[in-house]
Image (cartoon, rainbow, N blue to C red; front, side, top):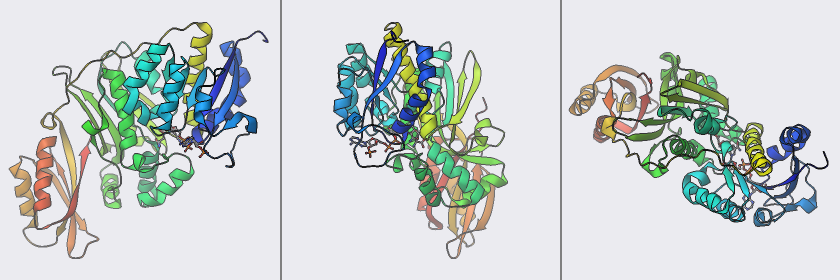
Amino acid sequence: MNDLPVVNIGICGLGTVGQGVWKHVTRSRAKLEARLGAKLRLTRASVRDLTKKRQVRVGASRLTTDPMEVATDPKIQIVCELIGGTTVAKAVTLAALRMGKTVVSANKALVCEHGPEIFAEARKHGGHYFFEAAVAGGIPIIKAIREGLVANRFDRIYGILNGTCNYILTRMERERLTYGEILKEAKARGYAEADESLDVDGWDTAHKASIIAYLAHGTWVPTQAMGVEGITRITQVDMHYAREHDLAIKLLAVIERDFKTDELSVVVAPMLLPRTKVLANVNEVFNGVSVTGDVVGETIYIGRGAGQDATASAVISDIVDGVTLLVRGNAALPEPVEHHCPPRPPEHSTNRYYLRLDVKDEPGVLSKIAAATARFKVSIASVQQTQSTRAAAATLMLTTHLTNEKAIRSAVAQLRRLAGVLGTPQLLRIASFED
Ligand code: NAP
Ligand code: HSE
């Protein structure tokens, strides 16, 4: 055992995830070392504030406030970037990769925004960049798409990719609280990003969707090129409607490729999902990803999407891959082949929709709404009315038959201009995902 090679690991960022990694590597060290045939040393860690109380005990001599010291320490072979953000994290990542090291990251914003540059740097200097923890927390979805499902092409991938939002939506549904009340708890549990608007406005899901789209199709879709909506406009009225109609509201990423036209679409938005779908029943902090491959059919992955332990599980799996490559030879894993898929135009995207509007409670409003939707050939399937919280107003909930995205958006723009319509209508897709 004494002759085993030693692999030194440095942790940049000892917050929620970093401490989880420290804790579980320490606890499972003997088991991991036996499986790897190598000794693991947690050599150094960086933090911003040396006086902050930590859940894990790290000797003062091993702590620094300079993550670059960890990243460029010649003794350290594997650097975990668990800082977050795209400035310091990027500098640390590139510095470590330029020294030929392996970098393990949970940072989806960084992969999404600077993936090509980072991957190129890893290749150039003979290092590796692993990021399993960046998508869907503890679910090994990157391994599944990149390795396990390599025989497939992917017509459709859809997923609940943000634990914070799923936690909020589940609790809103069950306890009828507002999203703001529950967000505080999600933060306390370590699920939310340092900037929580990344979660609730949909951007964190968009970062993850961009990474999945690249791994599955070889095309980088920047978040600005996707439709991205968050959950902040979901109200108890929407929740009530969903409950009554056996639907669930989930923040979904939907990645679809039409292999006839090659068009690729990546959308992030809250959607109504029939309760019969597995993902409609994925609750709390859990994430769920449905991957449909032409060879395998549909496969579904469910697991905790955020939080210290689940994320540490994914980071440690990458550390283990890094150690394996170091100890048993420097092979590379299969990489996506770069390919340019054109974006799918909105008129090629069809859905049923749910539309909630506050309107003046007076005669003729409904006929004006029907005329506005008919103008864009949007056919209404059902109408329900309830009391509005606004004075002298009613809330209407409409659903449409299948219609295309361009038509419904034009109809909603027209509705916003109608004198009888108050405020901004709420538009949600009703996702059925039937072929
Ligand atoms: P966190 O709790 O805020 O921890 C960040 C750590 O980095 C802290 O130790 C902090 O130091 C340090 N740090 C922050 N800014 C720094 C700077 N400018 N220079 C040096 N050190 C700095 O964040 P986290 O939740 O662990 O997330 C870390 C990464 O994992 C992010 O990319 C996040 O998106 C990703 N991620 C998180 C989860 C989750 O459930 N939390 C899940 C998957 C992926 P102090 O402790 O001294 O403040
Ligand atoms: N804030 C993220 C989430 C962390 O809630 O899903 C996991 O990526």
